[in-house]
Image (cartoon, rainbow, N blue to C red; front, side, top):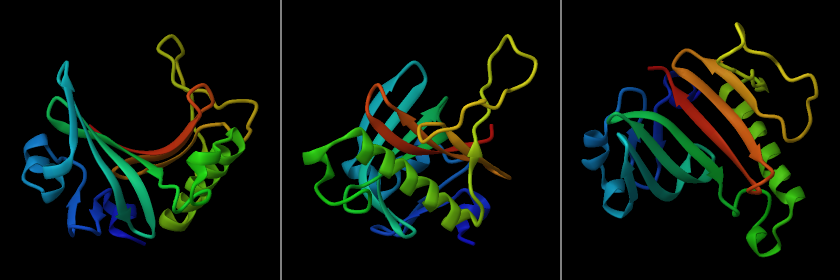
Length: 169
């Protein structure tokens, strides 16, 4: 099992740097990756897009999300060189994006040693989260971990699939 699987710490192979639970914006600013990151700030949130990075056995477009100065979650979207195929943006289809989501879910299984299951839907007016009755290729999938959770998501309106590593607060 990787360090990411057991601790939530992601190592970027290009720089040898890592980031994970408890990291702050200041920690990120001291990293080499910060030099080329695109930042968006406002309302106590900072979003840092660090571009395509090698993480474990995949190449991902990586975005770090900080809330109140602390790392809240990391979004990873498989780069087209990994899934579904090189040049996929030139021939984008919803089926290709579903293939990316399936690749993400296989990556979760390979990385964490177990598959993700249907993500519970949490609504403020319900006493407990609910599991969707209909499970299909677009259903959000997640895996709870000691440091937070990893999830695979698909937004058919924007036509994109991504992974999210969310950290406990």
